[in-house]
Image (cartoon, rainbow, N blue to C red; front, top):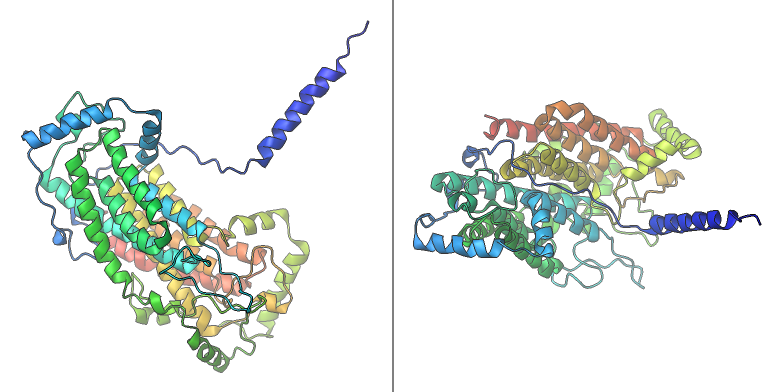
Length: 516
């Protein structure tokens, strides 16, 4: 009797096929594990670095801690030893999560919130688009609509608050020079690397409080979630044996105070009037006087009001408002001119003969609805580069502050240009796109401006990787042509303008004391 070997083989194949299907249907994003580390440089002089909003690191007072030989501190050590001696699996997991870095994790949280809220309001039955209401943030449509300008601004205020608070923390850390609990009491075994940086006030508590207070203003519907994250972050430092309670308490007070000063600037930067639709008629007339014969019109049905037409009037970080106008690039080609027709024909050719690689690039850099937008894309790149370099918390914050303020400045300048020229998009001439049609004028490319500004700053901070960042910016810029939503001249002018914008942040970096 012959053995039937077909059926078992068939079963094996079937099992394998089912496993493949199950795996293929799993849309969970697998993030890499982010390890904790001791910083390559403790940046002991960071307490004298130049701040953005604070006049000096001494502007916010932090009282001296109790002496390490005092009864109060010894009681804190005893409590910490008990808390950190027997962790649950859940506590260990949270220690590992926050051990990746306070600045790193809170910027990640902010990007995830931006993606969650990057949803444009839908039209109502009357054909009108309701505006999100900050006073009722969870109603439909949710507040905020975290579009690229909004996200760039939120990330800039977050990073500036983190940076200014950490510079202040470093000032007091080295003034009071309190050793870590594991150094003060050998029986306390820290669950994370101990760097030797003084622990009072706690840098993690500083970042948690500063981040919470900025993000609750930017995403007011997420306060319970943010409170839970702040609590978990602070508790993780006790579970890990890294800080006593007074370290955390001083850090929380400091972070809260600095965030209040930073958000004081936010209240007066002009964002509240950045969606002034009453000015668009005058903008269109101005564009016509400048020679734009066919101004941009919304391609949505019903027509959607343009996104934040007066965002170009918001106060920038690294230069004054007068410089915004000075940074405007040259005029775009006249519609119907030989240069315009050449650029339009190039897009028609891409539409007809698009390669797989062009489609891949267009989708990779699309950063559209439901994403954390181009600013978020570049800030993730910056955070990963700083983590790879094993930066201290304060230097990580500096990196993200330099990049994020350049990105906000890029958004301001780009929106100024867009609504100065009110230039028509390729979709007004029959081009179809698979990456979404932005609801604002074409010239210049936002992706190109954001990307070149970020690449310029990152190339300064990480000179060995400057070419890589420049190549990324060029690819991001080209992606908008491959996506058929920008002409080549939109992209080239955006790259040039973005590079100039980034250079102002580089000038600041050269003078902030961090590289001396």
